[in-house]
Image (cartoon, rainbow, N blue to C red; front, side):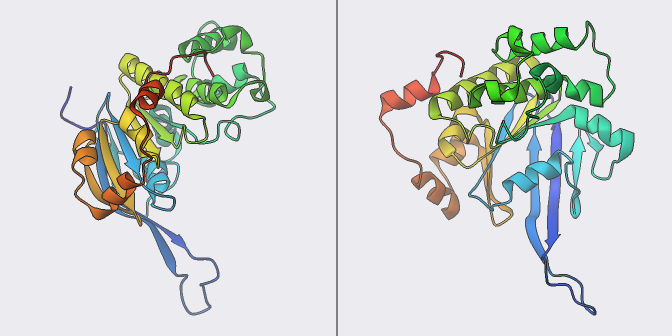
Length: 280
């Protein structure tokens, strides 16, 4: 594996104006959601950004994916500065960096069939669709463990876990280099979470993409991450390899998060880690 990171963020800052603070003779006050955050993500690896609600982790992910503009700092993809790209160049970045969102149903158009949903990135980016959308959609459904005969169905006809698989299939349609999972399993039942995590790990082994995994559940993070960055108040307060952070946390906030993780019986933990039941 190359020592050069696939995705590199340096000193990211994101400020938002505070509503109601602007005056005739003064600028609006600003809230700093992300404050000088830096990280490296390597191909085939998973970096988890963890923290409580409001820590800035999801905003950081959106900055890295170029869904929103940075206030300052830089983002490099494969060594290329993508911080200020727009137009066609930004469209190419969007192909290489795809996002799986928290709520599968709110991120899927309820009026569109699965076939139309999972092939939307290809049409949006005006890419060739060998064999037509039906053929491509069926292949994508198979890759995420769903029945390819169901490409004519609508999102409401699927369970939450199945709908999230559809979201993953849509992201895979353009063969991304980076997959951003923004709380992608937090809305799912524990057993379904384990199935989705296993799917992501399997797809990562096959495709080699880097995964930026946003989560607040450290039990989930331990199952999927290779490295961890802990965020609070918009800053990274601790970062390192997964086992080092979990087994020997250095920052008080990290210790607080770990102390809040429920202790469960070992056999239940094994069941969670190895859930391989029917697709949900």
